[in-house]
Length: 367
Image (tube, rainbow, N blue to C red; front, side, top):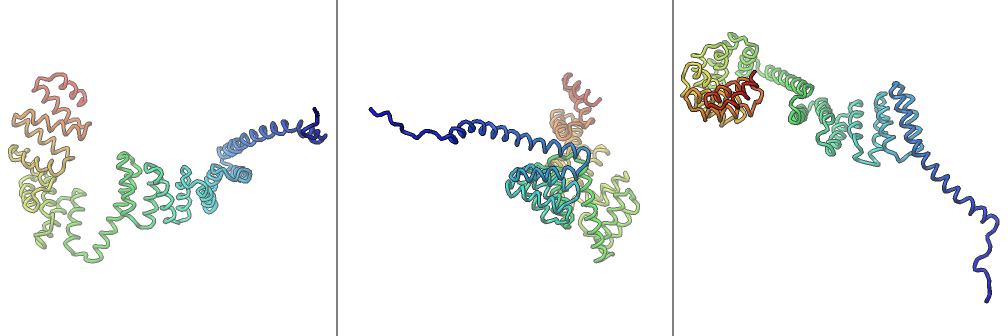
């Protein structure tokens, strides 16, 4: 049987390559590890410079990293942020857009792109970028806040106000947002008043606004004078009797307040505040039975009107209807859990109902 070879013998070069191949593989693995570590090293060195506020130095490091790792969006994001910090807005826009070409919803990049557009007074582009960020994260508060700012810059105040309102729906305690909304509404109001005054400075509407302004400043004599002028000029002006009634109520002139509030209810029998103020006057003058239907109208029209539930509870307690009083005071405390007077009334009521544990619970909250 022939013992002929199936393959030709390895050449000297072949044997050398066979020996070197494992070494090459090992070096490739080591180089790959070095590349990975080198990227983290870029970030570490740049961060150290940022901490020292050496933004130009950090910029150079990120540029070098971007050249070595052209498909790493995080590098371009960080480079864009450095440009933004240096107020190099065109460069930051370019950097952020490169990120979004690779990953359209890369975290926060649309938001930062919007900020750079704001810096360039490109308000429409800023709104578009912020909205894209909000599509991915509707509760991103800073994106919504700056969307409102961009709308204001375009004089689209209604759109701006809506953004602030959404923020307050999410967090009613945000003082910064409340401040911005108040400023916006105040500015819009002043502008509208000026526009109305320019159209007709002696109009019924201007008289009503002047009366309301005096009332808000607690200049009741001046407010009454303006309301009476308006009443002579236009007795059918909407809301005039309610406005005048509230001024008399605040002056503690209850007979005149009652007269005007009853006239207001002739115009609108379901007016919540007119019903409430009149009911309060009736309670102060020991006419509790007449106050009850008015307060019932209030809670039907305005289910969140806490004080109406509180006053209804007082009426029923006075009438000896303790379970009815309990129902309305519990509703009041549900609407405003920290209201001490409601807890005090509940403590007194539970004492009458001989429920000492619940009495003590509400008494402790009151104290």
